Image (cartoon, rainbow, N blue to C red; front, side, top):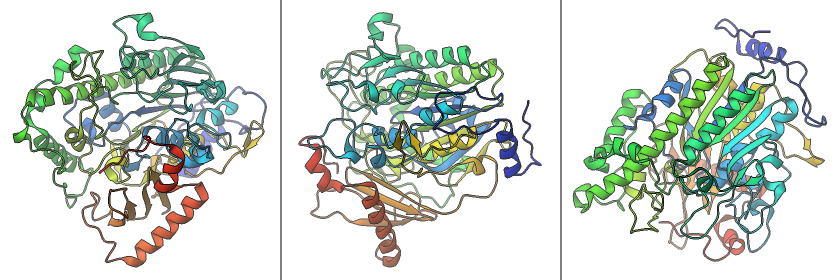
Length: 558
């Protein structure tokens, strides 16, 4: 049976058509996977790592990303989609539809000095992953890439925390947060990011030689699975979690050469050019102002070794270039098997560009297999154009992500830009709504927390915007709540007391004008909402977190 979704059908009618072809929804309590009815949509979720809001061509970048730009032309771009400012918390929210603290990843993946459920560092059993929810509904579940949800895997690898124990039929990738792109099990500080093929530990760089590169390897495995399983009657859910462009800066020589020299213009010029392209693309109203260059970033005219700075950004751009080509291979394979019309593809990043200083191998240039560098604060300021701050913070520079969705059978109004706010907790609800699979009340004998996110299908279908709601963030003591146009945000500083800032994101998306003093009632209402949420979700805040994380695990960030 072929489902036709057309302009004349209302959103409700379209969902009825989709679900009518699925047959009876399968309860998660049913033992074992059931064979799905034909035409249930495939779902492909692609995640970039540490990529800033403006790093794609379709979001204003000078970096060539034709495949993701093409995906945007065939679908929808979001301008107000947000993640959770850091790798682990975002992945926890993405996979479960809950806030990270509810899933056990309120901070990071490593073991704590004192056990606290909201900060245990791995997914708890009071949540389900997208894979665990979809598989009983008849889905083949596949993952390639970075997991980062298994706890302190370097000391003790627990089978029940691995992807295949959390709903995935097949897994290929690394469990930790950072990996050498050429030799994933080789790091300068001795930490081994466990690399698995299903459940078997492997050393792929050693096994496959100098030609190995993680981005290409993850793409190859994803394409292989689509070829193997994409023609089955049962649909597939594919999660491609790339480690690009997370540091270390590693790229293939020919990719670096393609971008070399472009960045000798300097970060001020590149940032301004991106901002202007964003306005021309219609991503922002022209009232949106570009903040001044971060004061911690030197003027380009004062930089002594401009060639070295050009190299850093050229390698970073090369990583994104190669990621885009990988996305292109996945999309071509979907077309090859005749499933483009019936496949929902979503792409986003786990946090903003990082200002972290990483130069562990000063004797080796960025890009080479044995090197370990990051691109640094000035270039991160460019990546996060037009916003301020970075990964770790919950200001817009830390949480704003490019989000692209394409589903030709449903998203009929293509090349669309939406200003509808969305949050990473919405991905689970969207996948389940698209699949017609219910969210379980219990799983494996354990009660499951209620879903926090909501489906984005009404946005995909071109109907009216979603109702207003409050959404929340907390990471390392950095806090925020947004309801409607208002955002209340606070960041940890070296001052004796941090304070709350209030922004009208309709008029001031780049958070330049703090209105807390002029709108004390709004600030008080939002702070009350935040405190209620924090208590409900077990959020400890900076002081409580310091007591359980242990020395050296929290870094003071200016």
